Image 1 (cartoon, helix red, strand yellow):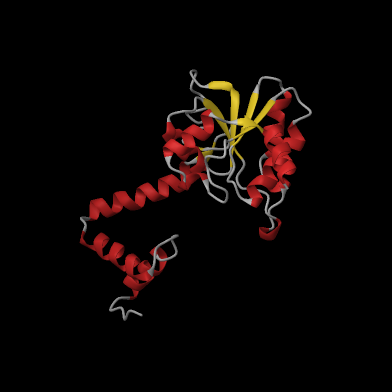
Image 2: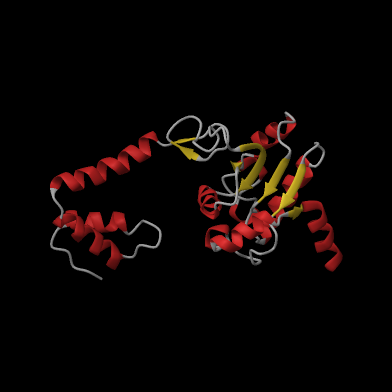
Length: 211
């Protein structure tokens, strides 16, 4: 517990401490660092944060964050628009992009089905995903969700919703360990899991056969 000589300092520390993974000790260190900086540097820091909050939008095609209506991945003419990789969050897009093994496009769900957390299918961007598949332009949907119970439940729900359409539905090879989030998987493992992806139907059958 700290005793602050300035109410403004205390309020700034409290705000920084609200950030994920930042405790009061680290927050105090960050605030004191900012106090030592030139005014123009602090103003630039604050302006950058405000501008990010005000100007970043959701890509109207894949729901990734973007500086414009359509993100740079969706607008890239060299990306394979017939292959859609379905991920839970923006961080997963970054993880997969870092592998440099994937040349298709993405669809960000904005979460996974988790009744315990009050998240159901209607809370995700599933309708727009299905609409993409309905057009017939998509040839493969890669389910790249975390290998947790919630991730597997969401995978199965998506499969049940999309398998009626003429599209191949695949999933990551189990190089990513059960219970792992994609953002914590190393790039080599994640890259291999993408390249060696398998049919979701076969994976589901084998999983059921083993239980």
